[in-house]
Amino acid sequence: MDKLIIQGGNRLNGEVTISGAKNAALPILCASLLAETPLKLSGVAALKDIDTTIKLLGIMGVKIARNGSEVSLDASEVASFEATYEMVKTMRASILVLGPLLARFGTARVSLPGGCAIGSRPVDLHIKGLQAMGAAIHITHGYIQASTLHLPNRRLQGARYYMDLVTVTGTENLMMAAALAEGTTVLENAAKEPEVVDLAEMLIKMGANISGAGTDVITIVGVDKLNGTTHNIVCDRIEAGTYMVAVAMTGGEVKLLNARADLLDAVIEKLREAGATVTSHQNSITVKSDGKLKAVNIRTAPHPAFPTDMQAQFMALNTVAEGVAKVTETIFENRFMHVQEMQRMGADISIDGNTALVKGIEFLDGATVMATDLRASASLVLAGLVARGETVIERIYHLDRGYEHLESKLNALGANVRRV
Image (cartoon, rainbow, N blue to C red; front, side, top):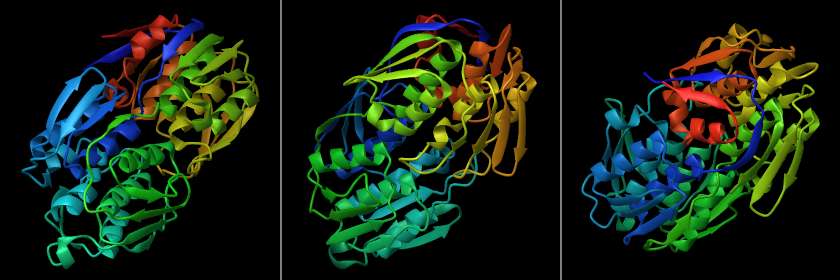
């Protein structure tokens, strides 16, 4: 199994290009199931979760051609309406085929996702939303069996649906389903994330009638059919945020290309509070730091507040910042699993419920640590970049789910990272 070996203490300088967002690409790939003609995408990152999604769509009968970051998908001859447990267990986002399959073909059989290391992510909101649109849904033997064959014209019916919890994948699934429903669907308490907006923008290019994406009320007027289009995936704000924190911690100056500051307001505000200089340009962000940082309190919440996917990285920043910081996690209940690994490197962190108290120290010490989930892995890389001596990070397959060419990008900026 691969591991990363990091020699800490190097400043980061230069330029790095940010990849297309994984969390936008996954629903957009699944949206190919809605189109009767080919969909052409650019900015699709080379990541494990994206490989899994493409493989799943291929099994269903979608014809796929891939050339670097460009992918074309032709779903004109889909033959299978099933996502098996074997596929879904490796990636919870596979649930995103449920809405498109049901909307276009009137039937779907999708395995319930397995557990997730960072906490439960229930799919009941997806199911209740589809039921509100008239779908008949039964859960048997670990599978969601859904049908619209009893409905008028065998099509989902527009409905008003309020989501008890803000759910990104739930919003995306129901928005895709509603695009081909009869009548108008209103999704209330919808997720506002940039990735939801990117999906909506592509669906509109395919012929969908959607308004309100980026707000908490999205209105979708169903249309009879959708066609393929061309679309460039929005830049990955979490990858960008991770590199910004890396520069703040190590010191140096780095320009992030293909990065949008308007997607990172909460992160940029906290980096400036910590003492880094952040300058935004049209399609890039420059971060400059002397490596001397002040502790910053953070509290995660749905977009546009501070993203849960940046919590672990700021925990790493606070371990070497001057002062004491409170880090409060409100989204996922098990998202402090990186804490005990950072403690192995000497970090002074104590946990009380969903809040961690981080007392900054002068130096972290390199150690052998284990990655537990995607963003925890990234936080351990950041800790390794500033630690004295050698840090070995095991189980880095998590990293490959969300960071494209991480070690080569870091090494190009002056880090010393080896994969073995």
